[in-house]
Structures are given as C-alpha cells and as structure tokens.
Image 1 (cartoon, one colour):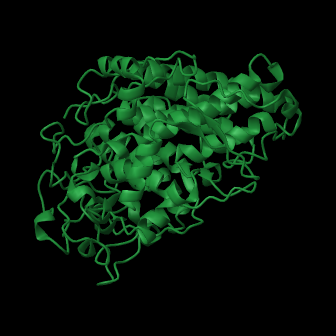
Image 2: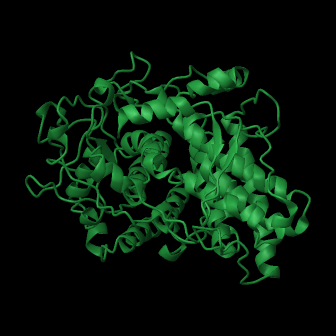
Amino acid sequence: MNTYKWFSVNNRRAGLCCLVLVVCFGCTKNFREYNTNPNNATDAMLQADNLATGVFFSQMEQNVFPVAQEPSFGDEIYQEVQNLAGDVYSGYMGASNNWFGGVNNTTYGMTPSWYGQAFNRAFLSVMPAWLAIKKKTEGIAASQHIYALAEIIKIESLHRTTDMYGPLPYLKFGSGSLTTPYDAQSTIYYSFFNELDSAIDILSTYVQNFPGSKPLASYDLIYGGDYVKWIKFANSLKLRLAMRIASVDPAKAQQYAEAAVSNPYGVFTTNDDNAFLVSANGVQIHNPLQIICFNFDDIRMGANMESFLTGYKDPRLPFMFNKAVTDNNYHGIRNGINITNKALYTDPFSTLNVLPATPIRWMSAAEMYFLKAEGAVRGWNMGGGTPQSFYQTGIQTSFDQWSAGSSTNYVADSLSKPAAYTDPSISTNNITAGANLSTIIVKWKESDAMAAKLEKILTQKWIAMYPDGQEAWSEYRRTRYPKVFPVVVNNSAGLISSSFQIRRLPFPLTEYQSNGAGVATGVSLLGGADNGGTPLWWDKNPR
C-alpha cells in the first residue's frame, strides 16, 4: 500500500458521498450525501434494456467486495476494507508490512482511515445504488423482480457491514433527514430475514411466469441474470444468517435455517451454484489480492493456515498458496507481531496462489454443507442426512472446488493434527503447544462431545471458505473456532483483549463529524464502548 498517497486521498474524500456507476461506457454519477435522492435517470431510460435500473447493479456487485473504484485506488480500498480486517483477524493471511511504525489494525492500534472504509463502501456505493433501484421500481408491479434482486445484493453487502460494526443507519437510509438514526443489529438482522423472504417469493413467482427469462443479463456480474440461481443464493444467504444468530436466538435461527433448506429451490448443493464476481458485460474484474500480495508485497499466508494445512497434509494447500522462495517450504506470518524489517517477512514467507483473473467468491456450496452439518448437530431438520454425511460432503465439495482430488484418505485421518508454528525470521513468534494450538483431528467420531463435533465442522468450514476472511472472522467470533493465534503486540491500550481478540471495528470518524446525533444512537445500541473490544449482538458464546 502506498500509505502516504492513500492517506491524503482518503482524508480528502472522507466527507464525500460518491456513487461511481461502472458500465460498459464508463458512466459516472456523483451523490452529495448518502441521504440524497439519486433518482436521476429519465423515464425514457426505462425502455432501454432496463438501463435505468440495470446500471446500478454493477455498482452494487462491485462493492460487496470493493473492486469497483478507479484503478489507482481500488486495490487499496479492498486492502483496507477486507484485507487489513477480516483477512488478518481470521488467521487466513498475515501482514508483511509495518504501517505507522507497527501501530495499526493488525496490532489493534486501530487506524481511522482504514476502519471507516467498510462503512463508506456500504453507504457511499451500495446503498445509494439500491435506493436508486428502489425509486425507479416503486409502484411498478412489473418491475418488482428487479427490486427483489437489488434487495438480495444489498443484504449480501450490508450483513458484512453490520458484522463489522454492529448497529447501522439502515432502515431509514435515504429518508432525506439531516440526521440518520442507527438501528440495533438485532433489528437489522430480522429485517434481513423479512426482506429475503419477500425477494425469494417475488423471484420465484417471476421464474414460474417467465421461465428462462434473464432481464438483467447485461448487468449481472454474478449469475448473468439467472434468477433461479439468485433464489438459491438468497436461500443460502438466509441459512448463513440464521446460523449467525444461533447463540442469541436459537428458536428463530432454527426456524429460518429450516425454511431456507426446505424451500423448493433450496440452497447451494454443487459448485455450479457457487457465486463468483467475474469479468463480463464490458466490466473487467481484477482480483485485488493479486496486487496486494505481489505488487504491494503487503500480505502473505497466515500462520494459522500453515498450521492447519501442513498439519493435516491438506491437498488443497498448493492451490491456495505458493512455497516460499527462500527454502521451498510453506511459511505463514503470525498476526500482530513486531515487524522492524519488511524484507524479513516477504521472501521467507508464502505468497497467495492468486492471479489477476481469479474470480472473487461470495459464497460456496461447501459452506452450505458445513452449515447443514452444524444445524444437524444442533438437532435441526436440515433436509435429510446426518452431521457426518454433511461434514464429509462439505470437505469433498471443497476439494472439488480447488481441484484437489478425492478426500477419502483425508476424512479417514485420525492421527494428523494442526502443526506447531515456527516463524523462520523471529522465534519469539512461535506457537509450539498449549491453549493456542488446536488438537482437533479431521476424522468424524460420532462418540465425540458436541463441542468437538462443532470444532471439526467449523475448522473445516474455515478452511473451505478461504479466502473470504470477513466471513471467517465473523464465524470465529460467533463460535470461537477454529483456534486463531492471538496477537503478540497489542497496541489497543487495554481496549481489546489479546486472548478474546478483536470483536468489531469502531464507527468511522466521518460519522461523528457528519452524523453525530445518528452515530450516538448507534453507540447507545451497541451495549458497550465504541471500540474493538465490544462484542456484537450475536457474539454470545462464552469466552
């Protein structure tokens, strides 16, 4: 990351609410603030291949994982939203740089220009585009399928945002008032479920009435306008969100999860269902991780990934990471360490196996099998199958996705355990044994206690969801699995526990400056101080 350049640009733009509409002819449109009505397309545009609404979908989709910004800044925005938050907090990746003298997000010395970016992407790009679609389709019965798809994409984006911050200015977004109040995370989640149910019903009716129709094919970078796939995605998202609230509202969690699985279209079952953001319709998607790893030299394999993948002799390892150039072995960087010399944490450590054209995955079938395995362990009706069958199918589905061959020997392994971690540069970062090193094996044992079964499921799910560190971080916070190595250096001044680890991101400074009364409502709903140590609403598992 070019820290100076981005820091100055970010400060200059922090107060702006700019919506960049990325379409095949490079059109852009600015919005003064996120409460502004972006209803600027003319009625005549409605007749032009859904142009009035379609152009907003690319903007929404390219900001769920932020890749839609101008080329000189897009990769740095992704780095701040995703990479220097969930990717490192989940244990997937380790930072190889020491920004701001080592006092930054990775060591819990939270950097305002970084931790506000996820909020900005949601409320400066995704929500204005959604609002534009809402305004253009409001009161038009024949256009409700378009709004239904916008609702699904909005929820895919905003659930990631609320899972970073907690309360958000969600339900009254776009009301036109100068101050936008925040909603409790519980309110936001229950709204998600209602909105998903409505969207699923609308799209289901549409595909029954117009089979094979793809009215947004020219704009949809995920499924090319295939509504059947989007219905499956919505059900899968519903299952994900249902499991997220399992500890705080188990009855509702079971209700929503069982409804998602029993829906006629169901959830993802094969890798053909997987949701990937890809280049299409004149829009070129460049995977930001490739730039962050190879151009910036700012990220490497995480120490936890080394521990689990090498310990389990996992065949997916070479598809995920490259061997270090110094000794032809796999080495990961532990997070929250003192890096005085960047050169010590580049060549001796494993780069990511990612190319510029590698698609960006939103969700996979493997994740659904692990969710069903957990649901089955909890006694929920997951549509037939046992916890073991779902667990093993999830592993094989992940193997298939990575082209790693058969998982038969892998799932039968009752001996291999996560490996001790050795830092090839500084030995004080090593993890050799004790509470921070997992001892869970891969083989399913029906005689295991529920806690051991959950740890197996969540560990394999964690591996399968790579490289989506945001979702992995959320699941770690929800379940405490897998065991993620704690930071060595903690610059939070006691606000964040090293053992309990970071629970959320603080609200952006720009919100305190431009929406002070609104963000005050968010803090009051948070249930604690506005810092990284306060757990979210669904984060209720015992420490």
